[in-house]
Image (cartoon, rainbow, N blue to C red):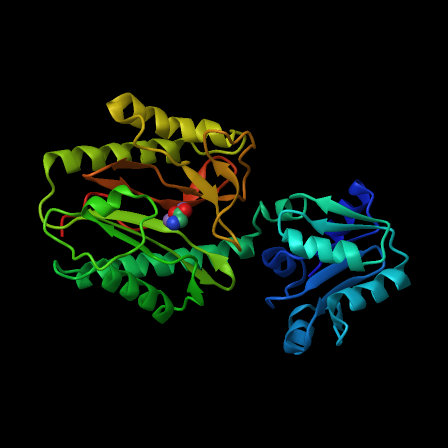
Length: 355
Ligand code: GLY
Ligand code: MN
Ligand code: MN
């Protein structure tokens, strides 16, 4: 892929002779290489994948136009030193937000360069605005989620455990074409649903429970993410009130989405509705996040997000209300920001389902 040219621009801007890209999603985005270990080395003269024997053939197949370097018994440092010498590199960038401190120390000790220069999120930022092809993969991933939601409703019965339902969701995602889940499915019932990121347990689903299901999958490398909350049996008045308030906040936030607004301005639309109804303190996470090769990307729709939302970004919109000892509701859709608004990639019903 040609994205290495965009990295060369970053090198120029930061005064780097070359950069080592270590973040797996960035490696994939720039070169197409999907292997789990290695680096991209990008200078003005070279764009290389440096990896080990396990991934050499894969790298040759995936990273078209790249030089592929397989490390020898001297490991990465020896191979990189050879490249640095031939390319006369003095200032070498590395991805500071990706590298373990211990790895950094090792590189600092062993690499023959004048300076190892931390690169913050300049490379990751390249991934913010999605191409139409990336959006298609995300659309496909989210449509797998929609199918699974429709099917899981027929599967759920009181007496089943959260773990059983989570396992079924993850199984169905793969049956419908997902490579893997984008994160372990969250299935939280009754009081457990008051924990936004509850881990599924052996708790059995009971009549009267809220049941929150938050799940996503990966299709062609790209993630999806959706949440629906339903009620097992008849919803109480309090459940209806909370559910409809979260839905109102979500719909209002969706309608507010358009390019040119700051992430925090969109967050505020939902937050004001929830807080003004007396639920301040019950919505303690951000409204949403970007989604792409990674499940949680920037920019976010959150109280502190100063960055501007632009066309081609893919964002979740996921307000919630969580009440300790009672339960919680979250409703999450995935949208693409368009030239004048948004397109919703999530099509599952959002009126309160009483199962
Ligand atoms: N469970 C991940 C998220 O919705 O952000
Ligand atoms: Mn989610
Ligand atoms: Mn999410």
